[in-house]
Length: 414
Image (cartoon, rainbow, N blue to C red; front, side, top):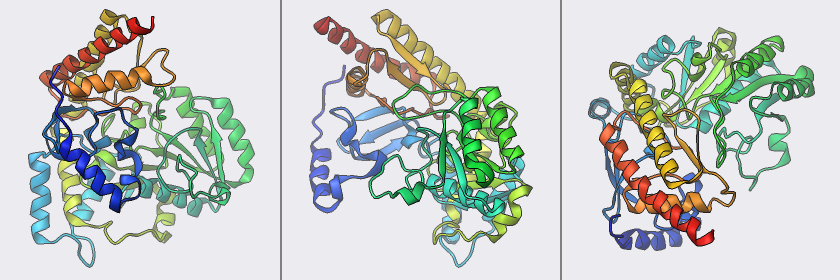
């Protein structure tokens, strides 16, 4: 295990932040909820490695919570961004690259007949819901209980500042439970605008769950029968499971999809894609933002999508994910520790048996962090095309330190 380096700069920045930022940090990147030793501030990144402000290096298994799909500082993507930036960033209207990117996505994404662009996942999911209501003239939206669709009042996991009116037309069902879907559809009656579903179940702190074919087909049938929109929220999984939309793996195509995270390899962009059924509604909808047509990020997105295809990035991430999953299973067996790995291998979720309070997960991750790998104790992680076999093996070496700690913890409590 590496000797612990004092987080002097990180702690100083945290103290300064607390003076000028409520709570010192907000949202999902607030390190206060992470185990001891996790940094809040980072200085740089390269490929699949990140360095915190105190100079500690980690194999990056979070990829900036998903946006980094090709690796940090990807040469072709950064060059495309810089070329466009040299001609202008935020103009009075979009640059030609907007049309190029829309054409690329329509050609690539199976259900897409058109595309619109935003800046983050919440923008895209909210645009999808608004579009569904505009296109159907109805109000009710079905979402899976516990699913994350963004951090705005209609869907935020937090109720702070949220009113009952914000969610008056949201009805819940259970993921992969067809009967609960039918019950929710019945509850919506003649007012059903949309059924929204994540590409797979990725609730915080719970085992991930892939959709069954029967479930996906049931949602498609229910939406079609009600003349409502089927929306796949592909913000988190998009471009890691299938270039044409994650549910292409099931052969089930939505009416609308939301994308963000991996679309531009870390540059801020989101997209809504849709079929002809909702084109007219999309043309009437007023959604906008001062920075939504910022051109260099769109150039980065074009370069990202081309590199994903040219480099067979999804296949590579799958191979590296299988290497990581197999290695963790082997280490868990050797340590006699119950381990659960769920969901797609490109987006690892690692939880421990008999760990309701997450003590094992936190202890494991603290030790692995000190040994040089950035795991997360409760959130699914992300691999990128920059991860190579030696990087996965380096992460597994750090994981071994985590399992050593769990063995000692078990002996002390046994």
